[in-house]
Image (cartoon, rainbow, N blue to C red; front, side, top):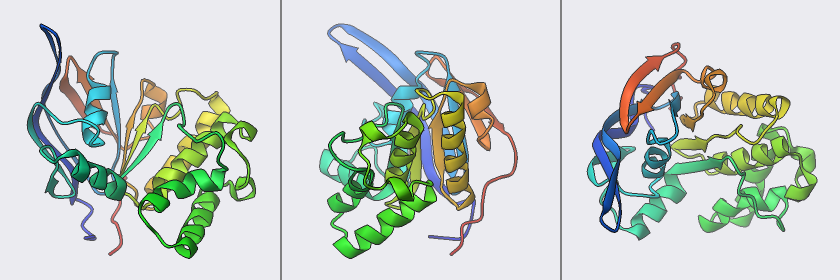
Length: 241
């Protein structure tokens, strides 16, 4: 990967998305164009129905735009079939969900290891990477605990470790503090900030202005359109070669 911090990771050009149910069509996105560069931390905000969830689904290759272009790390992905999109998700995208989405019967270690298993990473390498990810989120001593034995904040930190363990091109976080109290929310935001400080590209959907202020840029949606794009500072990092 290039050391140029301005290298685009995400390039959306005039993206639309129409959901149809019977004779009813709803235009969720109306010509969204957006560029996210390597090392940015972008918060996406907007009222319910503004298109945030639809946009995140397209960014995560979980859905296709109705029209327009989506390039992820330079590759046009909007027209790929499901098999190719699954590969893109596995190789380039780390997901963090509001509801954690951990496997209840698996330990923290096993939950974090799962994407590496899918990626056919050798067992020894998997162990090293999982232990490093646990240390990164401050949960080395909780490796053998199941989700039910962890606090909500700890579960979300496991989810972040799972997202980061594959060294993704972009981390997509959907309301990552939405189910947490203020103390646990702060812990999770600090983990995301440390990941950003080490060069991770993060796109975070949030309804909270306070949480959004932790990003380096806020993109606001309304009625399926980008209505504001506000850089907060110059924290875009230069990623080492």
